[in-house]
Image 1 (cartoon, one colour):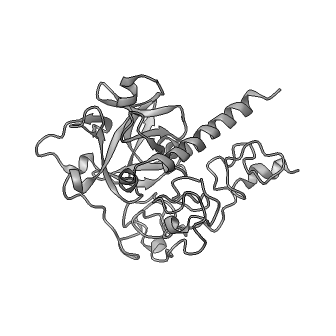
Image 2 (cartoon, rainbow, N blue to C red; image 1 turned 30 degrees about the horizontal axis):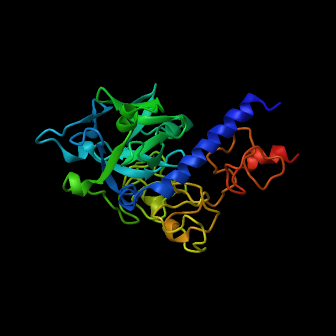
Image 3 (cartoon, one colour; image 1 turned 90 degrees about the vertical axis):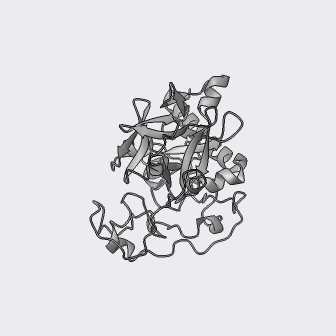
Length: 318
């Protein structure tokens, strides 16, 4: 008899891997470009095309832009998923604040270095459920999507209804095509100060610096670490099926959008991102009590790249 715990874990991982595959295989090239890590986007509602995602007292909603409002209020930096997969949305007008769900409501909250926050603020982008645009699936609740209801944003379980499919679909527009002049501040290595909580920890955490390891710091606040940030991935090949699609799919690279490629086989897309010195437990599902490395005898799932779930798999091999 297979335990319910195994089934739930296996199905959760299967859904995530399947969704990631859809992201790469089906997204239109223009949409893929608009979702590039480091870009600035505005999220337009598919069924209310005059409305965009913005916040009201930090509660996320869709609304028609008012005359004279700041373009930055409805613009977001696309960041590598804080949970280690997918993408996260950092507010242009409130640096260090990310769209995240809590109690199934979507809010713009300040970054917290907790596993819960990182997962709540990470989403897998898939082809729009309405047949156009993009839908955003929760990383930690993979049966739920961002959707608007009464103009407010929630993460709700999938429903095969025309209303839900349209409410859960958005068009990510490059900010300079919709909101004018918003551009991300790109800082050169060594600029800024060390005011970030994570400064001087040996890792560059400034998302505007090539070779950064995480996006935990606001631009310009991790100077010492980022002055030593290297150029990132520079070797390997492009033999992966998903190579050269505009998304880094190497699971051993911090900032990867998916983990669909074997390590070192998506070099063109991953160039400029950094491989951590220690990849032993960087899988999204590491340290969950289940071995997910397909090369280890007795593994429960194949959700992790080889060598990235060592703590769990060490127990399996005893």
